Length: 321
Length: 263
Image (cartoon, rainbow over all chains, first blue to last red; front, side, top):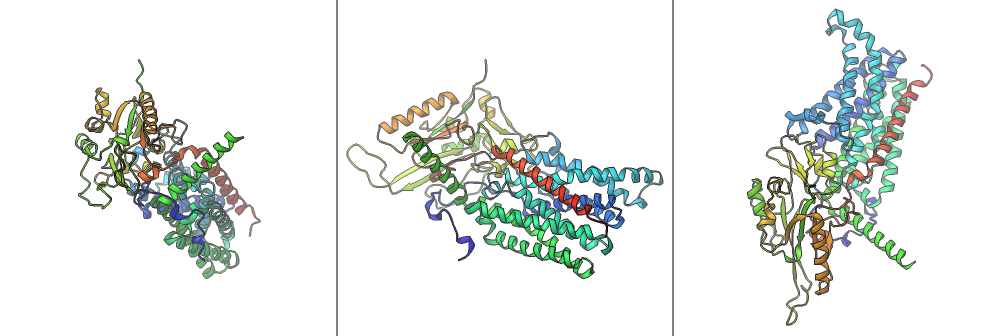
């Protein structure tokens, strides 16, 4: 029996309006938004690597990580603006700061992250700077890098709050574990990208980050799928299920290869490719699972109906006591 | 003199499925055409609420007697009709998550999108537990029922309620409507319609009570309504706490990664 068939609520037992969806599915384009979750995670993890490399005197890792942070951030920003219905109004995101809107809070996180991260990247390209700016920039690069690293954990995890703060059943129900899944995926993915570009003599911490990120992601995913039950089905079924299974295999293989083979260039490269692909597959898989759960009225109606019946039974118990 | 909260009471027991509400809404609010579709769902060729549909009449055919008629039974089918609309929730998911401030709460307690602010981020769309608001393809902005903000500001009745020929759609101060709705349910139950129940009338429900309540003759899901909707932001505190814990783990793992001995 396939795991997806372990349905806790019999599908036939719920009523609907001609089987039509109750919710509107997200209008976000998968490539833009799942792609942003992926590149945002890469940027966050790379900022950590850059700060660590700076403090432990690994100059190549530092330079590559700073440049990767800003490149990934650039792709993120482009994807986010591209996905807007009215892209010319992207700056309306900073009209207000609204604590009830994870997207508003996230826009401010991104702004606060991008400023120091950009400073560190520019500091790595002294050839592009006028002579008089080189020394001051070199002086502020380390504090700027530490500031970016301080905001990076928020960048890596707030996107989980963003998707969970919706009525989409598979996202909303997963709000406890998703931040950990995203944090692990960001660590493993950014370490993967770094394994591809870092010289072998500097890649020991990168391989460690790959392993701890992979363990975090796999453990959190496992816990999430166990706890969710029926509403977790979309994480196992269809295209989302295939992507998430592939991600788990690639995460495990990539982390093991990073641990055992980081001293050999081909193995480090292969581990990097596997981890980057796994990180992307996780975000696209989670995205698709949410969309699938919004399109199927069973995931909306059945849990709500169960909750109502349970509350009604509880009320009857209270009366009879 | 404070402005009372205004809303709708849609009594589906007297809806005749004429769709005058759908038409009046489109005409008054200049909502674009959404195509000439034949859905094959009884008399419903609209399908659902959306960016271009702010009132939607659902048609449900059931193999169930319509109730006791004078002079004996009258066939074994009943036809449910219901004009759905934005619920203008007390705790509105769309309003909570809107990052630009385009969605706002009016002086009438209704929830309205300012189209000159909306940048089409689309966050409100999956945040609505009723699946009401949507992004319009042609201009990229989010649209939904405004409870005719322009009309009620001038002391007039919203277009749908004005056009409804049977008073199935009633507009007024929410408190008054709630009383009227409870009275109507009692009346129907006493008259032999035990299925009559209210939807969206309870301030203790998952959205703090709706600004648009309904009298239904079957379970909400039969009409395409969620049976126990909860605004997603109710769990936002827990979400941020879990994210903060995950962020701490992320930072901690980053530090330990470099804390190992230098090789």
